[in-house]
Image 1 (cartoon, rainbow, N blue to C red):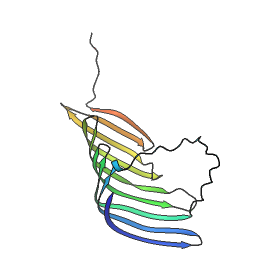
Image 2: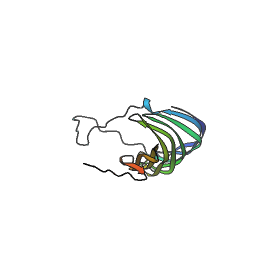
Image 3: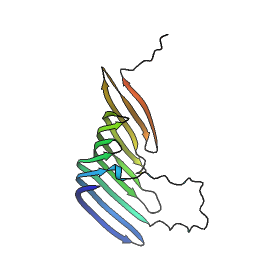
Image 4: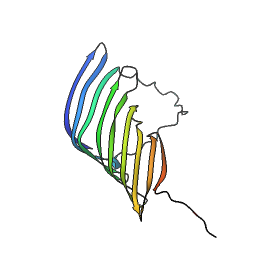
Length: 174
């Protein structure tokens, strides 16, 4: 990960509550997604006996904005794309952080030997930062048709379907 930009933060601690306010303005960047190994958390029904209890979370109040004035390059897992947009992350003591904003993804996605152009790529944030809504359409031209995949839903429960314009029909002839 390599990011370049400007930071403007105010950090404070009052009455045991830690506060961070400000923003990050990214001018350029590159994120190599292949360097991040996907992790699988243990099942919710896993019980570790004699495990110490987790420490209480720090009381944090946050209001942080992240904006990109130029695209950040993303590469890995078959993706060669740019990311633009902005997100505001807020948190109150004792609550989970929330995010508001939108990121736009443009580029190429390659899978199973097929290169698809991302015609529409939106990540919408209106809740948990790790679960944005998805509105993605990646296509390629085959003869006079545009075929590809459309992904909707959210990051934790994406819904993918094959896409064709104009629609394709299947016919079986004896």
